[in-house]
Length: 433
Ligand code: EPZ
Image 1 (cartoon, helix red, strand yellow):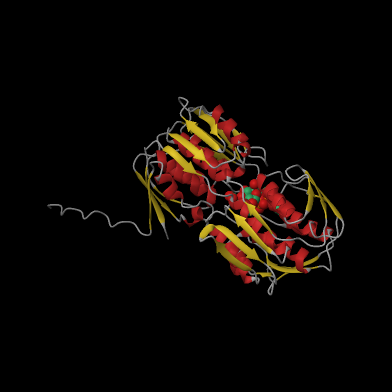
Image 2 (cartoon, protein in one colour; image 1 turned 60 degrees about the vertical axis):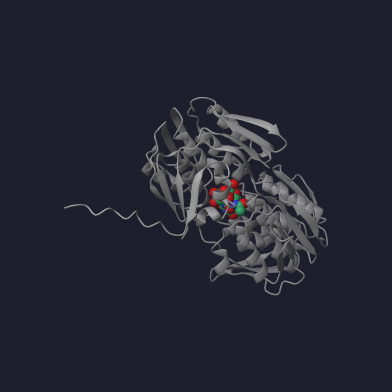
């Protein structure tokens, strides 16, 4: 199992490049199921979850290949789907596999999808995906850990989400585009990843209005055709890099991002005393603005402060003067990074959904354990400012959603390297007894 060795204390400087958004690429790849034609997606991030999705599509009979010799461009062709089953062996490694449920039913009238288990950050049910598909006429039964779905043809419906769900909105949007008649979806997620998916579906011939708002209207069509589409930049990777620049007191330019998707984070960083400037199209420059000040965050659906940035912000809050209250409203167990930060010297107390961070505290290097994707990012950020060399174990969590992060960070001065096992301890000189 790979580890990161990170020596803290170096202010990051220079320009770091953002990759395509994992959470856009996953639904967009699933959307290829909706047509027999080829779909070409550009700016796909080279991360483990994308490899998992490629395997999943191929296991169902899709032709999936990298184009232009680059991992960043994928061609998918679902001319036939010989085995429309999302097997548990794959689904258990990536919950977002449930995104094939809607497109499979819409395209073939049937689907057999393993129920995704929970994950480190919470139960992560998909009851709202199922409820919406049943309201569109699908019969869905659950047995032996699988969802078996059948329908002759989905029919348009009036769907109102009980809770705002990102992949629930995406799954049902993909179901609606081939349904018979019109679908009105209310209380939808407004995340940029939903808008990205809607843009691809529209390029494929779908008729969608309102993506990016809470109300989406879809007029079903008989078939969709292929398209070539470029995935948007990853706003969470960009936000992680902004905090890397801030926590190390560096002067860092984050390039290839979409600042319009980062409003809540940028506002909070400025409140905490960080200077963030737009210095060109898609380029943000982060610089010190004096002593960091405590500032509270409360995670909300987009455009509120993103839950996927909560752990990273908490690392920064350990370096801020005063108290920062960090409230996690979206997931029930997204404080796995707290104990590891405390082991590095942070002063954090958790009470229910709120963590109280007192700062600034000097962090000292430690051996720490990554537990989930964003908690891992939080530990990398803390290690970049801690005294000494930290060892981060189980960095495979990081590889799910960050492309070559150690190379990117090294490129702007971080002392970070990936090792598969720890170097043998220096031979200790014999001690004269
Ligand atoms: C998406 O997960 C993202 N993943 C997550 O990013 C992100 O944290 C999350 O949205 C919230 O922004 C992808 O897009 C692949 P939800 P998703 O459905 O869609 C409850 C990362 O780090 N809910 O919006 O699974 C659910 O339990 C990952 O990149 C139901 O109750 O999240 C949660 O409390 C982590 N029933 C809340 O809604 C349902 O049927 C929001 O979940 C669906 C969701």
